[in-house]
Image 1: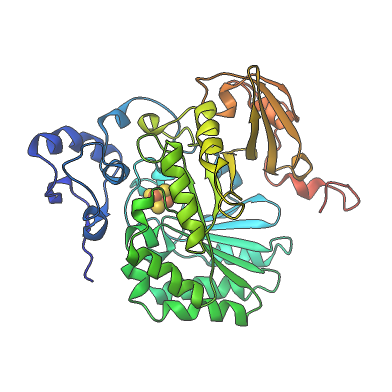
Image 2: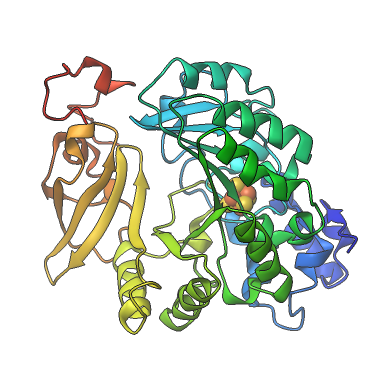
Length: 395
Ligand code: SF4
């Protein structure tokens, strides 16, 4: 199937002239991008269609809100295009283009012309990983790595998989949702899992389906082919207002993903990213949507955790009562914080840890409480290198 990519609102036949004029200033600030396959899934008679909301700009994106790098990724970037936040995991930002631009993207800064966070030449990042034997798994992301030619993608993937201490290679991609034909029609791509296995590692595809309607027969076929070739499949997505912020929709998504062998891994709280105010759901609302959605699901369909990808670590929200929000570090930059509890006063309007009043927790969480508070125990990258080998925090 020939899929054409569009970067101008004037190319959208379903958009009225009035809407186009209204939305153009938004796309000048935050770039629009989609393709003929995905646009064909939209019900253009419904202005609130969730897939339309996912790719078509919203005027409220221009409201001043959030930051361009809400998780402080720049802070964890030792060489261009390579992030190292958790001891055993590194990220390579190998591309700055996606099959479509999700309006709520937390890395929308990559699509801006003055940004150089990604590195199309990944050699410095690969060399960094090779020099760090503690890194056992690498996420190749961007942008969407599947927008690279298969030859270039294979070069990056096999270079990473050839590093003896790397045992897991992940590709972060929304391509099965945005353009499954990129996968279905590429037999060379299906050789990749075997090439990774030959080098002693396992390939994972970290998919990104936000709504059950993205799981079309073509998308499911793309997953099936890659799975049959030996790729492990998981899905992760944020809760996004107007797209999947009701328990029924989220439950269907999680259940269907489990049926096609692509179980949910994380459900994320939306990051406070610039332009994302119209897509944000409060932390309390997000927790209840997740809890209600997973209540009736099988164990396989509800293995996911509801988490904030905070600059200090991945913080799982575990419970909420009338007075408090209970959280814990599922992953922490400071390894010794992993598993430690955080308790904050309940605030039904808050969307992020930084807006909460934390009453108990490790210094990194206390330091992040209330926006713009100082970080008393914040240590710059990489904190674990200062841990003595006998420190119980060293894995
Ligand atoms: S696929 Fe991921 S990186 Fe690309 S626009 Fe969507 S959220 Fe951002």
